[in-house]
Length: 308
Image (tube, rainbow, N blue to C red):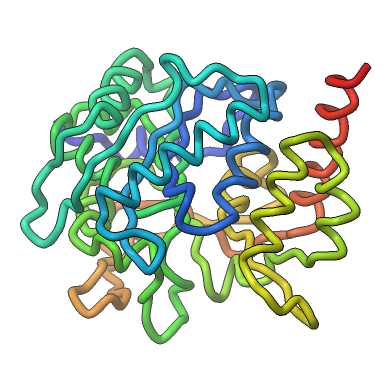
């Protein structure tokens, strides 16, 4: 049965109190997934992190989508080790191929776990799926179990701003069919666009050296990943866009948003607007300062607690 518009709008309201979350992440693709994952796990006052899913990716850092997923899985383990968090029952391998133009659900432990956790929830206590990768795991779950649509809220970093001339963005272009499944499913969706909205969520080597690197093995690891991404740091800053969806969930004032009709994802990777479509929440701006301040303070407190 389709979710009603009234029920969807209730689920799209910014949450109050502690929320159930899972993280869907292509952790090895870039360096910002690592920052998002750490901020989420250090935000126990806000998040009950139930699972972390490794997502596929394919670029010069991976030989195939399945290889990208496995690299991401191993990177998650490296992060958890430095946070003293056991991966048992928490980390799950994702799909090894994209949903694709055929819109075919793919099988994976992450997909089954996501469905089970969604079904364990309720419309008044939904599961927030924070997706900072190709949407293949989430789309597979929605195709396999459409009944979960009234028990989840997907918060996805994907595509560019609606005003951008195209939406050829890494997470979206990896699996256009998966993105079409997401936008056509009617699932409550908070869209966090990249260019034109999250674009200025950057940091620099001096900032990372001062506020991240000194704070324990996890700080040193994050700083290493940040600095090794480029060999030339002169006048250089690095996108850490994947922190934006976590930032919205931590405090919706840090990422103001509006309700709009769900755009259509075209085969040409552009947005098409049909105002008769169901509602989504659309983030219009991301304030980097409170998001990074929150992260720096929590990282420092975690490191100090370990040494005290």
